[in-house]
Amino acid sequence: MKFFDPDGEEYGLPTYPRKLAPEGLATRRQLRARGLRPNGQDVVAQILWHGRRDPLTRVRPVRAAYLYRIDLAAPVRPMTPGRTRAVAAMMRARRTCPDCLITYPYVIPTSLGCCPMCADDPAALAA
Image (cartoon, rainbow, N blue to C red; front, side, top):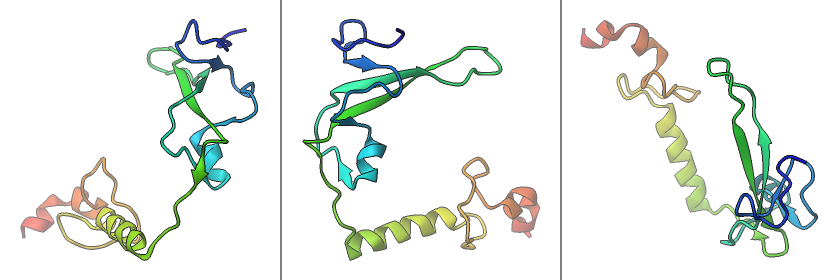
């Protein structure tokens, strides 16, 4: 069976194919869904699978998800008022165009580096 290496001889970590990880292990997303976090523990195993084929190179990349022990996980830290303000400030910065300084209700595309209006008409800013 491909990607089945419970002893970690081939891949360095105990490795399992998708949906065959043993009980008591979970990915970060699975921990978060249970209201837990890894709590600084090291990765104990991994899940490997083939991703989607790249249309240009026709290669199927190997994807990985790291597993942590559930019994060593800790509860997620509660959101404090200070963290709430910090997240709001970070999101406001992502929604503010650096050229026209308008704050939009959506995140500015990083591919453009500015809002779509500034990207379409850079001469409007110079006027």
